[in-house]
Image 1 (cartoon, rainbow, N blue to C red):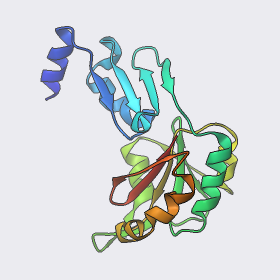
Image 2: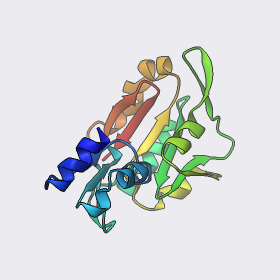
Image 3: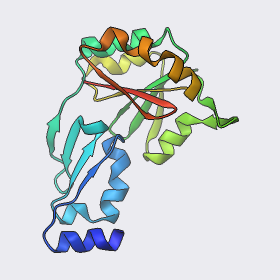
Length: 177
């Protein structure tokens, strides 16, 4: 697949990586596929941000408004979820929050999983609202799949007119503008 994608670029095709991951989580794949040398693009955060792989120029960004983001973070406190925000190379969680969920009948450190998969540095803050003073592209909430299935509607309901909410894995429910 890698060789086919490299060959397609050499023949003039433009490769676009599209993912729910943050930009940082796409960089290693983009480098391996030489997007920076071939006019490639990175579509991150489920489409909320588009980056030129060569120049790092932001071509499109649709973050959540600060007011909506702050209300969302406050609302998530009513649920047994692990909310976090990814900004640049940092993954922000609240100090003292749990990092582990039960997945497939075993403990699973979901925070460490996300950190490793996206090559992020973990930053623990006293209050996630500290990161909400600037626009953000996504609030990701993790929990046991059964819990999310039972509660996602109540989590999303106050924001259905202003924010998109979706499952991107059975243990992830995410919010974007």
